[in-house]
Length: 608
Image 1 (cartoon, rainbow, N blue to C red):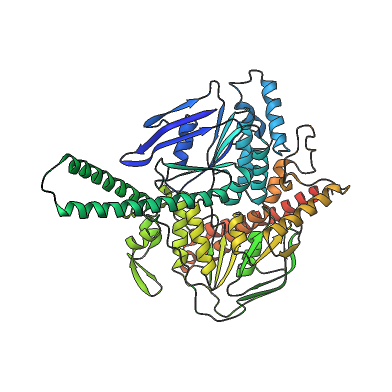
Image 2: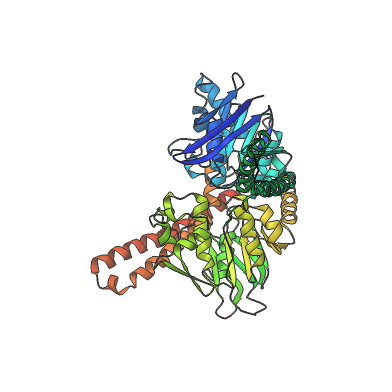
């Protein structure tokens, strides 16, 4: 046994996170830790890592146990390299600097890194997560603790992590809300929740098996409550009859009745319905059969084709999923469909007065300095939803916020709470088309299931970008797959697109012109066959993959400054106008520089 936790309890102030939690981990065992937001999963993981202490209970580790912990988010300093980041974490284990550098390089190579000198601050979210994992794997831990590792990974990165954990010799505990990941990567699921007598419920197997066993357990617990309630009613009738004498038998009956009443109270608390956010998107009453029709649209950025001659039709009741690797053009396709960008070729026709409501992944519309009340209701203390007036406190409770949180700054709320604010704000806007870009980040499984249900019931059209495969499998009526090479096709399912991409990569690998790029590899290269250096360095490849978003952001800034320069108050202020014009000219030059750099990187990649 690597680790045993016995009767662990933890509170913050007067709020109890969990009590009586016990957990054991065997060598090589893969455990998925789940539970609703606020249940204390991250705190429990920190306690197991030795970074926090329990209020009650004990942690017993095997002698010389090596434990590594990877938090939800990890930032690395600029001015260093990925190899140095890993090597510096080995200082206490490996005394020779050359040996540290060698061990770091081997580990990074196994995880798919090509450029050991890459600046960690230039990495994408997915590769930053890989670096955090490499930093700890280099220490050869017996037990790896990961807190929400799939949050910043795309579909390919998630599959890579699944393969890594399945083939690893170390044990691991993973906090995740990814249901498919839990089915594929772990062999035991543990849920922490108040509904269980011992604070947790553990099942050997994946998430599907867990759901089945949990429902059996909860059904049995509800049956026990009914039986105890019936016995309490009998006790009440018996006591109501009275007794001529307080005999020993009657005293025993009174004690038993009191114990049953206490048991019933506990069961009622455990079996009380779990609160979930009440999500229901409001649709218009439009009867149009074709809400949006895109005919043979094409788009390139910096000479790089993103999609070519693509047809898209959005109809009521449809859910169009867009799948593709980072930099493949998903953002550009969405912006082209909703009218923020013009296609290079083809046409996009929207129904008259079409109402499109968008959930943006970067959450830029959230003002972190606003209070929760201001974010939910910026004008007054009332929300109008489906023709009814609702007080902001009641509206907040609908999304699991407490009244005491209304004056809390948005920046102090958790990621899941911020996501619920955005969903709440979408709900008050009647829509024909919902466009959702990664809406599942930071949501727990109950919230994911509620969101799925509401999207399934939405009568309009849905355009969905998400790495949650369970949600895609349930909702998508078609999948548009972008291959990153300018081709975009319709697929029946996500799995069909993934098979097509795997086949394409296999064909590319056989071609004499070169190998698949490191960020497109599904599994990491082996240590015995280290990756060969490509025409682009790792840093250049990351820059190349991020060019689409960089150009779009710069062009958006140009539009913003052009609008600013046209405002009457700016035109009337000579100094302010000059400042805006200077900034506008600088931004236009930046757009031109970005296009030139994209063309330069593309030429390097093609060996020109």
